[in-house]
Image (cartoon, rainbow, N blue to C red; front, side, top):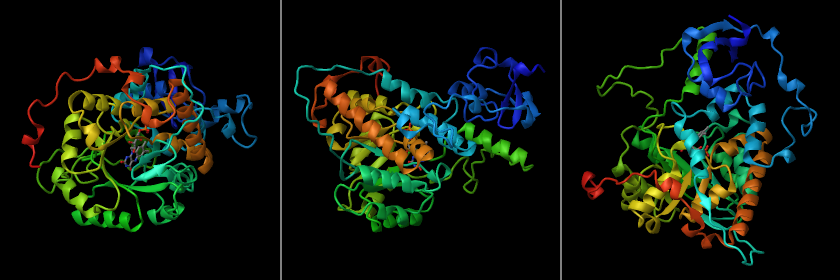
Length: 467
Ligand SMILES: Cc1cc2nc3c(=O)[nH]c(=O)nc-3n(C[C@H](O)[C@H](O)[C@H](O)COP(=O)(O)O)c2cc1C
């Protein structure tokens, strides 16, 4: 096999001659012995690899790190990660993290479902909305404060729940909590935080202007466990409860599964992943790690268990206008439009599409509940677009994980500062001085509007449900 047509993937070599146009040997490859340094095109190409193209282990002694030959301008002496001051955008922070993260961490953070369509569309859809700026207005003073998830925050965005921050940095979620507290924004911590919530809560000393902790709940299989988690969140003084509802099973994240399979093969323990689709009561549910039975009725008792004086309850993972409407009928305070960063159902709509769908079919939802959203948000201008369309606040997941992975708490603070700068600048250039002045007239959504469904469930959606 000519060397030109072989690509090392992790510590294995694969024949890429048959990839055709997907990948040109030698193109876009910075560091041949690590996949972390390769671009999205590579990941795309890797996703079509088949096992019979697997050629065997790579002789590591034949490889050199191309990074070693890169110019050092803007890089600190001791590491290949650029100096934090060089980072001007969230993409810069992501590139820095990519240099530093272990393959295991990169794969977990970056992975998304199936063919990555939703993952990509999440970002692309923001670019389909343009601004309609107004001029000749006094914009010297700008106010970016907003009540987000029950807390008066300095900025209209929050740190979305993301598990396993310790994979990226030894201080894990503490970096997120400290960054949020310093900048007075909300941190919504994951059920699967790799640092205990008891350690995170003291970072927010309950003073005004010191950020706030929100609790994300993956509904466990047992009702008792759900109740216990809700009680724990209350005892810790969490300001809101965010119930994730888009995970009756976990999405098929191939990059993650491929990595696990490679590890198992290397370690000589091959574990079959696919279970049969047996349908009896006792059979394990394929990818069913949390409750696969949770339904609208459960939201009613969870709402009650949280209590009415405790702060908002929000449903995370709403992806259609009908479900947004149904959510309003459960008495929750907010809905959180999300396709889980493209990690659950591939081809699920981006949150901004769902928001437009709500505008088109159930606009009253926007008056009834607070609307949050996330997915592919990488610019302050994305946040401003969402706010123009009625979102109360916007979450970001991966960017903060990348911030802490590259630079610890400083990286989280830096990411917040970049977004703050971008929002403030966008507001002035749009001609507004307060977030409350943002409205749909400041954006042109006609490109996305053309792609919305023509109609939704035509009858009263409640007829199909017990509520
Ligand atoms: C590594 C990772 C872990 C995540 N863990 C959780 C979680 O524990 N609970 C949850 O509700 N969502 C989780 N999410 C989804 C995020 O809350 C959020 O919806 C998503 O990251 C938004 O997309 P973005 O990463 O493009 O900002 C996770 C996402 C990532 C990337």
